[in-house]
Every structure is written in C-alpha cells, then in structure tokens.
Image (tube, rainbow, N blue to C red; front, top):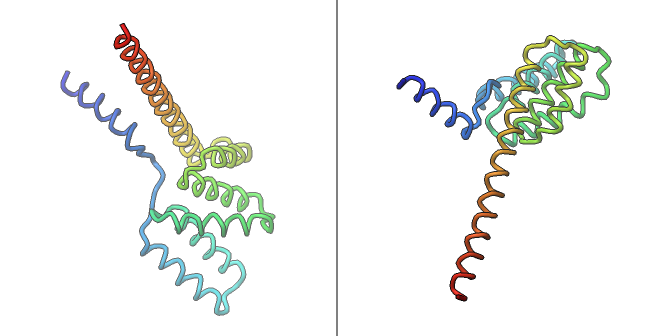
Length: 167
C-alpha cells in the first residue's frame, strides 16, 4: 500500500516538474562541438563540415541554456532549405522539433515531429518526443483549467460575501 501511495505522489511530482525523456547536454559539450566545427572549417571535406555542424546543432538544441537552444534553432532553420537528402532532412526537422520543444513552442514542435513520423512512422525518438509534447500540452491545459476554476471560485466567494453584507 505504501508503495502505491509513493508512486502516486511521484507521478504528481513529475506532472508538476515536467520531467521528460529528452536528453540534455552541458556547455562543455557545446564548446567541444564548436571547436570541432572551427577545426573542420580549416580544410576538411564538405561532408565532414556538415557532420560537425549537425553535431553542433544537436548539442545546441539539447543544451540546458535557452540562448544555445535559440542558436540551434536558427542554425537548423537556416540549413533546412538547402538540404536535399531525405534522411538528413528528417534528422534536421527532428532536431528543430527538439529545439522548439525546449523553448516551449509545443505546437511548432508537434507539427515538425508529425512530419518526421510521416517519413519514418516507427522512429522511436520522434514517438518519444511526440508523447512528451502531448504530455506538456495536457499539463498546460490542466493548469489553465485550475487557474480558471480558482478565479471563478474567488469571484463567486466575493459576490457571496458582498451579498451577505448587504443583508
């Protein structure tokens, strides 16, 4: 019985803290990827430069720092139009969806992850991200309903108090 109660409170705690299964990375990883890109610019093949830029984009959108996430979004948005390889396009759209998710733009994130799943319906990373997006949207809805119900309760209580003082 105690275990069930513990699980119940854990689920409530994770609901309000917003835990998800999306990995994050530290600024050290971002710095390492930036160094790698700088080295690749000094004469590596275009393919190697592209791979380094994709790793940097991954690190940026998975960063814990909002400014890094925004940089990653800008990089990916800038590189998407020139991408012709379908698997690379899918990867960049997924990373862009992660960036929008991290920045709180759940509708854009969901749109992009849906496009990824049209290309690869069984892609586990995209399925996991979609579930996290939907969980956040539900949580935001529940919190919104709670705020609205509280406001209605306060107004009703205020009216009841005002009416009782008039009598």
